[in-house]
Amino acid sequence: MKLPTTLLLCLLLSPSLFAQKDTLRFNANISAISTVGTSKDQSFWLTHNRWGMFDDASANGLALFSTSYGLNKTKLFSIGGGIDLVARASSNSSAYIQQGYIEAKFGFIHFETGRKQSTYGITFGDLSSGSLAISNNSVPIPRIVLSVPDFYDVPFTKGYLEFRGHFAHGWLDNDRYVKDAFFHDKSFHIQAGGDIGINVYWGLTHIAIWGGNSPVDGKLSSSLSDFLRVMIAKEGPDGSPANEVNALGFHTGVWDWGVKAKIGKSSLHLYYQHLFTDGSGQSYKNKLDGLWGLGIKDPLPTRAVTEVLYEFLYTMHQSGPGLSDPHGTQPGFLDGPNNGYRYGGRDNYYNNGMYRSGHSYLGMSLGTPFFMTQKQLDKFDPNINTYSSVYFVSNRNIAHHFAVKGEVTNNLNYKFFASYVRYFGTYTGLNMGQLWGSLDPDLNQEDYFFNPAQKQWYFMLETSWTIKNIKNITFHSTLAVDKGQLFNNAGIMVGLSWNINR
Image (cartoon, rainbow, N blue to C red; front, top):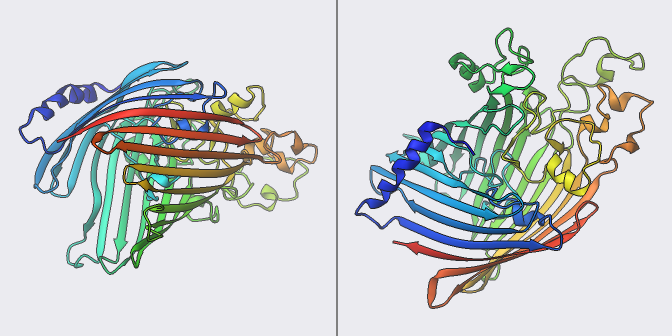
């Protein structure tokens, strides 16, 4: 994996950060982890939402060395950094830098450069199936980031109004359909309520993939003026391939809505992430597509259950089955323009006709893992015709995700997932690749693999055990089971980690 030269220089400088006298914020971890399953393909929750470290096509043997020097939050100015090294033995063996970054803060403003694990969009921590914007499903993208990472008081509001946000520029890899593209992302959230026991928040995360080298159109627009167009999702200049009408580049956005409340000793978090890819979705013409969640911390007076979560993912509407834009003369079997549908439909989340690797990085979805990629479908049958050349072959899905975690004893913790997904494919697939597809009376849609929907369960039980008198060594074990019309296998993950905190 190629990093920009400036970032490599930053990584080479980062060991000097650990030579400082103040070692209170120093952390180091050495882990050894292995996975194995009843088939060579690994179970879903053994490889997803694990920062892209595990190969899903075979058993894994993985060694991870991690070290970091954290920021001092009590000082006006502080500097830190970290590096994680991964060595993996699998059918796609690899050794690489999982994280490598330096960071600094001045007051409430933070700066970082390199590859650092970060998620964007507000969900319910590690029990969530993953943010629709940027989750923990893939290897971090190398970026330069300026941010206010924590909610900070808006002046003169006495703490009743807070804000946070970030602005970033990154570099994607060359193992994509459009090579060496740029990655732009930013967010802004505002929260009201202060410490009265209930908080309401709203925000937006905007992501764009732009520039790069296309195998069809050559070098794509990547000037400073083009970057300014990308920032505000404005159409490209004259001569930009396929971008004169629509926004320059490939855009994904997520509106965040949520309520957090204290009820006795319990905390409740209700949230909704609204996914969109264009103006129709941004203005909610894709109805209620998105991720709904309800999480509760400390729901019971016992530590046996410390957190519980239910999430509902619905992405079926996509602004309707109509065409996104007019396409000249329509077939004779149509009664009216777009057959009565509103233009601006078929949003095709995470997919783009020009940036065909879509909302992914190094083979993994950057957002929810419940959107199925061509790579995943190939594990079931590589000969299935999806009538599409894009990366995600099923983004019209309905999913239910239940998660719970707690403590069996003071030294033994657990986490349990049960996820049920119905994969309906894409509008393009349902139309069998034809422009008018589902409206053509000569098509037999039952020939489409995802009609009717493919149903699938994913289960996981994960435990971590710390020996009573050796608290810096932790044993990990995970059992994962896939059951359904696509995948039927089971797998285990076992590991040992040694942690040093000073």
